[in-house]
Amino acid sequence: MKHKQLLTALFISLSTLLATLSDAQADTVAPLDHSINTELNIAKGTASTVNIWTQESGGYDSTNSGRWGLNYWACTSSTSDENGKCPTGKGGYAAYLPVYLKFTEKRSGATQTLELQGTREAYWYNGNCAMYGDPKPMNQSAQNSCSGDSTDGVNLTLKIPAAELNKLPVGGIWTAQLKILLHNSSETEVYQWDSNITVNLTDNNNQQIYLPEFGEAAPRVDLNLRPLPGTKGNQTQMNGSATIDMCLYDGYGSNSTSFTLKFDDQQQGTTERNNGYFSIYSDHGDTNLDSGRIDYYVRMQAPDGKYVSVIRGDDLVISNIQTAHIRPVHLPGIPQAVLCVPAPLELSTKTMDINSKQAGHYTGHLIVNFTPQL
Image 1 (cartoon, rainbow, N blue to C red):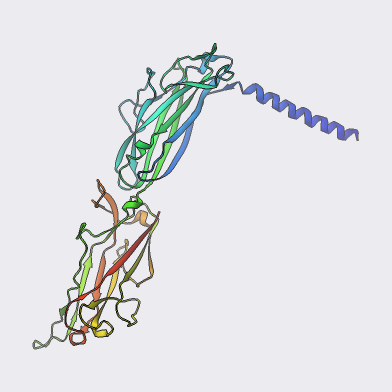
Image 2 (cartoon, rainbow, N blue to C red; image 1 turned 120 degrees about the vertical axis):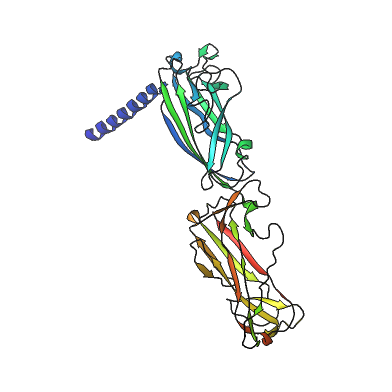
């Protein structure tokens, strides 16, 4: 029984000792190098303001307010926006410090410079009137006083305003590497602060099946039915074919993992068909008869260069889009070039007897549904 009481008393004593040490160390937090990854998922035109850092401590010492109470942040370059462009030393008074940072789209290499905003706030460990206050540009080095208490340290808030994120011109994966430096006032201490920023920007409203030959016009394709050469002028058979230059834009800079396509047509008449056939129908004949319908096949050239036979109504999945061949194009409604994945189509009829079909004009519709998997 005595041993049990001793163990319990020892445990309580150790717990109290740890709590006391923790409280004693909380008066001082030294500045450190700081590196973070920031990833944003945004639909184009709907961005909100995003903070890279929010009241992140740049160090404080409650027993020596002059030690880190005058700390400030500055850029590594005042001329290049590669890692953030702003003054490299102390600055004056303003609402915030603008930091110009270049973003690069992963596949296209397109660039866009955005303005970030850096603000430094004073921090009081035992403030009589506040804990945070007096926001200034992040490169402002100034001692603040609150009811006679001088600043113990500083905090950083650095944000990308919504209006700036909405300047990214096209969907895609936009990346930037921000590098700033935390200085003490006497320049005897310097700490590296980095943020690797990724913006996954989707432009779902501009996903398109683009047919370059037609631009914004409604596509009309002739199957080019022609008699086959015969002997002594006796031409009894015919066939036809056409190609369609098709390019698929996912609204994400062709960074999708895969595309799903579904092909269909508008059936007329009651005759059942093989799912490998698509059809055009006589404008004025009897479409319930085989003679009033001409069937054709569709093949699509996949990104690996091989042709794939299309089955009507079935999903056709194209994988490995991130490594597929891409083409820069100017699409309707998008102000600058974007990248689409070529997927040309080949339409061809089987050879048939001319007399097996009703004379006249034939029309039909090929319907293509496109769904990218981002």
